[in-house]
Image (tube, rainbow, N blue to C red):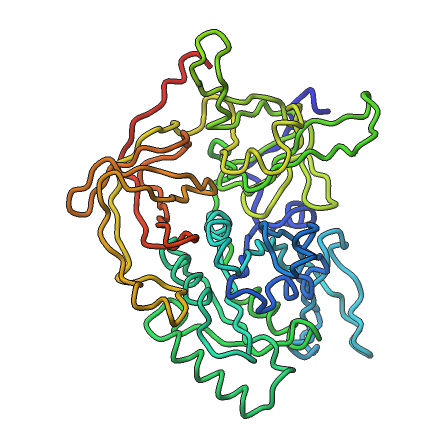
Length: 455
């Protein structure tokens, strides 16, 4: 099957059709907030999937890399079944319907949404990882621990980041209410309300939950279904997938005949990918010419051998949700997220690759997420020529040198080529001490394109 393209008519597909929802998610929801406020625990409570997978994450009990999990949302078709208990969530491999478990109900739980979670690390050291995850989010859940004062440093920094990325659908979860008394919970609720004033979550609901005990999870699921819209997607355009992870799925000891090609994971922004499609990754990889010793950019091309969403294998994938794309690429190229930040699509149909950018930028007045003893140094100064900044373009986080500044325009020389297009939003960070801090955002005006003539 992988040697020929699967036939599918994109004009007949919608994000809520069972043909699509049965296998893959069609909306990405991020979990954001301060470290140890329960983001990964909430994802597990909704999806049943543990996003903390790596040895260092288990040792430190924090998320370091982007976590991912899919969940299906069901609603009982019996109108007499009381809310919010008429809503449930299960893993992505579950069937499209099953009997309602409420005694005497007699209704059926029917699939109404299939969602992907992008679980972001909350530690300030991994802020750039959070920014790369924000590139594929359609909505976000801001978690605030009820047993700590609000806001904590990364509560405000994460919220500012998604504001910069123009993410509108955000709501607040007051987690860990099981650890405090009612009057304290009400006091923390007022702190959250005060913090949220004049932000995108000023009018957002604040849902009290205990992710650990799965208290009020059905209310969260109900809110997602009723109030988080699935974005309008273009299924007929040339496909454009943002890569946020890449893997070598082969295990030590595999026989040569059993080896499989590299896998990239991400979210399709537009278009439809099919098993058997020719694929291209931009910007690809930098290779040193053995004769001239000059470094050149080589695009990566292959064929799509498989498409999957967790345990679900698919013949085609549509925009929204997180999917894995199996290929014939050398697994050495995809191991340990080496291709994260690339863009995947059909050969010759992707945006240009740039080495320099001209941007229209906006800086924060002061740094967010600073500790009390650091706040006297929190004012954000203007960009200066030759300074180094870190920019998040899509899911690509790279260094850049400022080569020119005039009013709110700046020119950047990128340390690595990147695939982007004019109008795209980017986030900027500056180094303070040992950490990179968010200082503002920008939009791409134009750039200097890399000559791909030899690819």
